[in-house]
Amino acid sequence: MRRQLLLLVAAFALAAGVASADAGDRKDLQLFNDIAASVNHYTQFTIFDDVNVEVKDGIVTLSGNVTMPYKRNDIHERVANVSGVQQVRNNLKVLPVSTSDDQLRYRIARAIYDNPHFWNYAIGPNPPIHIVVEHGHVTLTGVVNNDTDRVIARSLAYQFPAMSVKNELKTNAEMRDLLETIK
Image 1: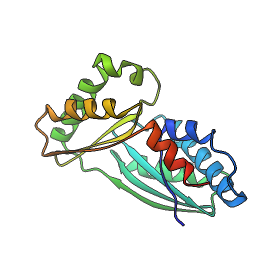
Image 2: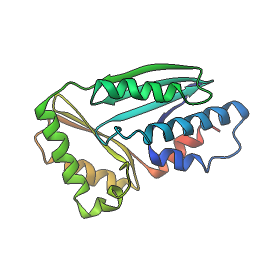
Image 3: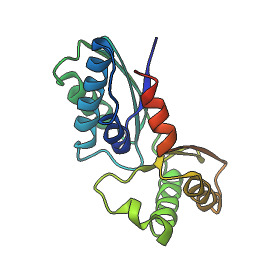
């Protein structure tokens, strides 16, 4: 069975609470935690990048979007250097360079993180709500505390002239359930 987990600070924080996994799952979960820490400590990883990690028997598949080609390469190297990684399949996509996409990213980020409702999300080095914009299409990813926060973030993103807004935010409970599936 393949396991896909979102690479987020909350994900590996919740993973610490997962117990009673078999040896193979525990090894994959520990490897995922180590990869999450490595990527989250990468200083160029921002709220405008979205990296997903799948781990199965030491084989890591990266997917998602990054804003610059060097990030794709740097993240690949960081993951490849994590102890226990046997192979890395790098399916990270580099988003096209676009001034209008950049402006939309920044405007949505300001709307979300300047909103008093989301101030507690903005205080860490890696805020949990990620804003991916490609050709005017917006995707919100990451982890929020509850469904209300998910709805408010989406409504803040909708106030800008985007081609579309896709809300892929997960709640803490949904992430906990996702991590429980690897028991």
